Amino acid sequence: MRYTGPMRYRTAGRLAVLLVAATLVAAATSACARRAPDAASVAAAELPKEARATLANIRAGPPFPYERDGVAFGNRERLLPAKPRGYYREYTVRTPGERSRGARRIVCGGKPASPEACWYTDDHYSSFRRILE
Image (cartoon, rainbow, N blue to C red; front, side):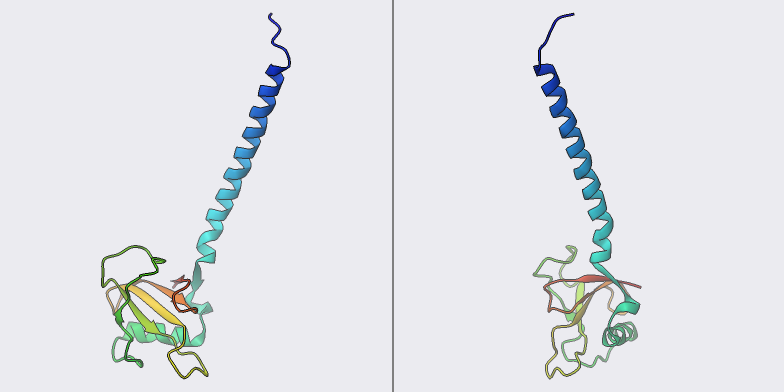
C-alpha cells in the first residue's frame, strides 16, 4: 500500500463537514417550507369579525357597502399568484373608528360570486395571507 500522507485525512474531513452542512441546510429548508403556508395563511374563523362579514357579503354578491368594492385589483405589488388581468377583485374590510376605507382589504380571485381563493391584508397590500375556509 502506498502512503498518501495527511492530505487523505484532510480531504475526508472536508467532505464530512460539507455533508453535515448540506444536511443541516436541507433540514432547515424543509422546516421553513413546512412553516411558510402557516405564516402566509389565516383561517376564516381567525379573521376580525368585520373581515368575516365582508366574506359573507362577497358570497352574497352586490350591492356592496363601499363604492370601490368588487373592482378589479391589479396585483401591481406581485404578491399574489400571477393571473390574467381582471382575475382579482378587491373588497373593503371596515375598520372600526376609521373615517376612510382604512387599510384592510380582502382580495379574491376567480368568479366574483364564487371565488377560487381569497387573501386578507391589513396593511393596504404590503402583505397578504390566504384565507383558509
